[in-house]
Image (cartoon, rainbow, N blue to C red; front, side, top):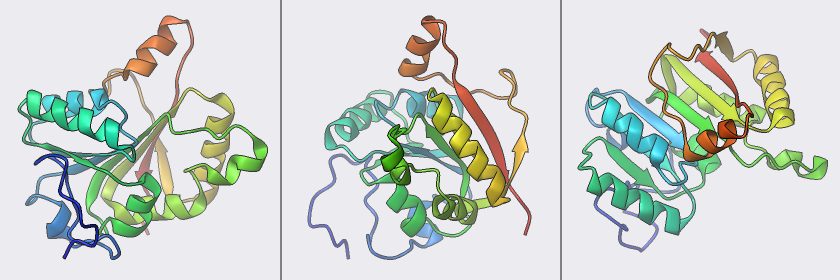
Length: 205
C-alpha cells in the first residue's frame, strides 16, 4: 500500500508501492531491461535525450520539486517515450533507502547543489554513505557518472570517490558513448568554461 495518499501527477510518474522500505527488483525494473537513474533531472532534457537514443533501456529521472516533475512528465508524454519515468523524491533518499541491490546499470549525477560554504559541505550529496549506497545499487560492472561545473566540489568529490575504494576510475572521452549536454552545460561552455566529470565503475568485492 502506498503510504503517501496522493494520486500520481501523470501515468509516467513512478510512484513506489512503499516509501519506507527497500523496493523489490520487480517493483522498479521492467523485466531484464537495463535501468538508468538521472538524479536531480531538472528540466528533463538530458533524460529525454538518453531515452530517445536508447529505446532498449529504461530511465527514471529523480526530481524533488513538483513543478519540474510536471514539466518532465509532459515532455515524456509529448515525445511518446515508453522507456522513461519520473520519480518525485529526494535523490539521496532514493539511493540510500529505496533502490534494490544490484538493480541499476548507470547512475548519473549532473551538477548537484555544490553547497559552497564550508559549514554546508556536509549537505553535499557525494559522501561516503551515498557512495556506498550507489555501489550497492549498481549491477556488476555498473557505472556512476558525476559531472559538475564547480571546480572545488569536483576536487572534493573525486577525493572522496578515490578514498572510498568503491570504484574504478575509467577514461571518459567525448566519443566513448552518447552523452547529451544539458541546457546548463551548453550555456556554460558557450561562455568558454568547461565541465568537470568523472566516470566510475563499480569495483569488485
